[in-house]
Image (cartoon, rainbow over all chains, first blue to last red; front, side):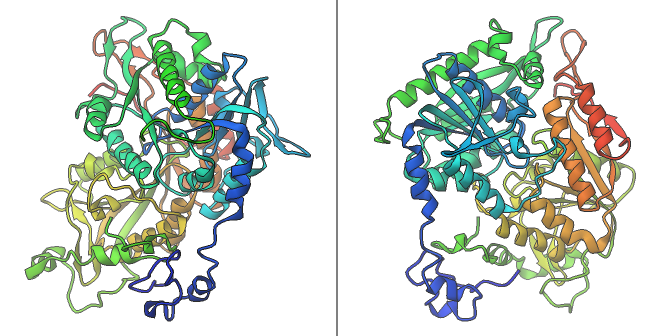
Length: 320
Length: 274
């Protein structure tokens, strides 16, 4: 890896490639030509494509394994229960695409038409897209570096024929890296309604989620709120609640108060959730009386209320 | 993060973060005495900084949240208990968990002739740790980097950290099969890593990702020491019943064994409330 000039002015700067510190930099020619600062034409193409999508929601977490994909899937299920609501679920976790399994669509394939790629439809009003549908075998590892992942995300946003959609839910991998930057960058012109951030109560998770919240502030992504998942465990034998992930620092509630971010709700851990995900079924239908289902429904309603306060063209009536 | 001013941080060639962090050197020479490395060597990257490490273990999982960092930490502590000298390299740049797990968050990284001195977590200096967590100005600061910048830092972690003589170097990784994993395997290839521990939970969604991770290991020529099934069950503190926290997918396990070209040794860990 080559050294960068000590005072690199930045690839987007007016001095890019022209400053005294640029002498000898291998990127000098590229920056001086202005190519580094030119916007990607795909951004405009995606903006056009997204005109038929009313609301766009990103599901994020700095931490892995907190239930992003599970939440994304059940948010999609919950919204799609109204058959007049068109829902799209996009899985941009390129290395670990869980959505096909959780939605019971493993093995399905993507078809191409004149208007682009067709998402895989679970219901008439619920379409899904994931790199998982593009793999020839479930064992195939997607060993891609950042630029290739970015290219795939660009294709998902530009080339998938979503049609008229009320809600586009974007499930992301953990972290604050290529996939997240690309999703925000490509959707920026199309206006994202906001991000739902998932965490568990433990501090190891919260410390990563604080970074994710900072990421959202940095890229000016509105935060719909935080969901505390796996809030408590109900023993199926004695029905008493225990803490699998003890909130030693106050859990998401204290974090949200400190960072002035809404807490959308707390979802307890019901072992049947994992079972539903493995079977590819909606937990909301499998266990309608579970406290977890009630929590999910309350959170989904709050998300719908947040989105309904935003105009479809991105005029924001709610402060971010 | 100590990074460039203005927009310099967006350039994929930026390495200034690490150079700037290096300016937090110990004044007065106490850091030089404690690192134990002979003086008079160049302060630039030392190619042989892993030469004194006997075994390298990568802790991997395709899935997030299965307990890689926890297993890495517990493994290091267990090896120390067995009298070994252990280093931990945390290459999860976006979510560095190990400093908090070992209660050394906020410690500074010092410099010596051979490079960066890893942070010692105990008085006896039997466990040393390097993590991007030590280089952040604020603990909540997000490391928002694309792949090339992450690759550059990981290469520096491998070549510029003065690990000294270690029995084991445990490398904790983020979930997935992407830049960080390729960078660390490429950087460590000359040192013949011992192998990989792949961590999963019983759930089919997790095992599915592990199958992909096993494919990754095969493709990059990384020997799989075994698979650890974490959170195999939960012991209820009220009634002491052993509950399946997440259901075990036996089919998924059989497929995982087949895809790994044999039967990886599997260890199972139960989860107890803290």
